[in-house]
Length: 225
Image (cartoon, rainbow, N blue to C red; front, side):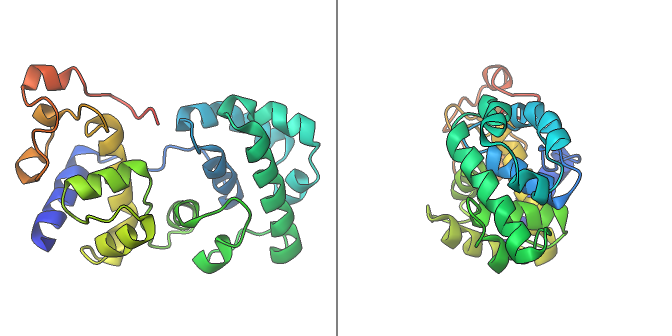
């Protein structure tokens, strides 16, 4: 299992050498807010609103003091904008009150912030601070189960089971590899099995079209979610 899992990761690393977080950010705070806004929408949509958002409110202090109505208008294109505005306001206020306006670099502290769960915390830790962590989003969880890395549907249990198969230093890149592959080839419905670089290692091979031509038509050149 360990050998197969690590071989899959090596092949995905070769397939997606540029795999990274697809949210645009220039600071841990920007990544934290962008990740909160990315729920139930695409990274592309979030990236379309964050330049104006961070120009108006560049740091936790400014965001905490933001006019709610103006903030709602800025984040509205991401959907669920009232709930997201509430989360962004509250987490900014918490950063100012508890952490002197700085995003903490510890999982235990990040998950105490309003609207921040383990998935969001691991994104920030891995991509803003270089701290090893596994981001179990819907794509990662789906692929981890298809590959046989885990049978768990609970994200925390899946995170721990998958983490045991790989060195800690590989966790962040592993997350990006599976997420990129899930967005481009291993779709929830109709995975492009016939165009998959790890098909011969995948226990779920055949869930989607195995014909190379039909599968190629399903491949996305960039992530959409």
